[in-house]
Image 1 (cartoon, rainbow, N blue to C red):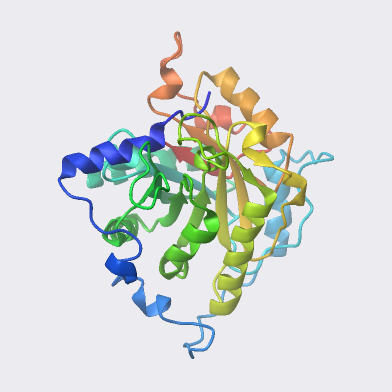
Image 2: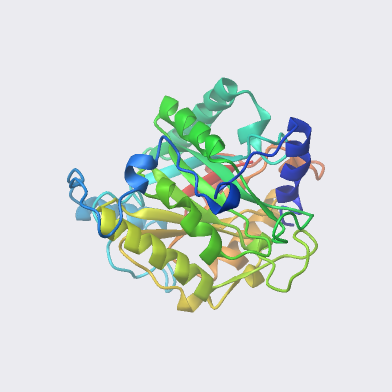
Length: 350
């Protein structure tokens, strides 16, 4: 049902490029700084920074109305999740995010790297329009969801079975996002590494108000097995570390709330979900990202996401894998997905 070993394609694609550029930390431990993100990245708790512009006041009336809209105006014992209202500037539930997923080094990891940039952006905006038409009450916005740390089938340097992308590729994502006023998600597949090691490497980007984070339990190999050989897992402890990290970043820099997307298509991919802590500074999306025919996808959504509520939900659509089983030759439409309970607020295309 799952993505399989999709995240393992980068190493092949990068080999064909001819050279692997130093990624994340520079050579000999020297940390590289992006030209795009550097002005924010150098600010620390001990460094004076200019005050950020004031965030728009949270519209509490709209927040309540759109929260009810998310559950088809029929609240249940589980949905919507009771939580402290988000801080001003929160994107959810005021927006539905439609994202294109992938990596620029590979045409096999998702639509983001499969098409030429301008063609890809035009296609994304067409999908945004489709979703806006399907649900006129929620503003639909585009996003680029870039795999910045990719699980690998070989141990690589350090034996972590993961490959960090060069900062130039993240900069490329940001520049493309500007063209369509999109937000950006940086996606981490830790392999045998940990979130504690990988998330801080992205701080200069996560310090930007339009950059958010995603983590993929499928490739978190706590048993030490090779990524892709079995489905991995994150525990509430891993997720709480990440949300606390983002919470501190938002608080220190006066940023609008961050969104954390967590991929999931089985219950075992996330353990102890009831212990996941919520913050008004971080909005959590559990994204059902399994592929298959519609009934199978809907069932996975109900079992892995709907039955274990955390905060918001997402739903992934595969242009190729979702139509592998005859007689299905088209992917689910926005109208079909919006019948789910609750309505997903994050939509991802691969």
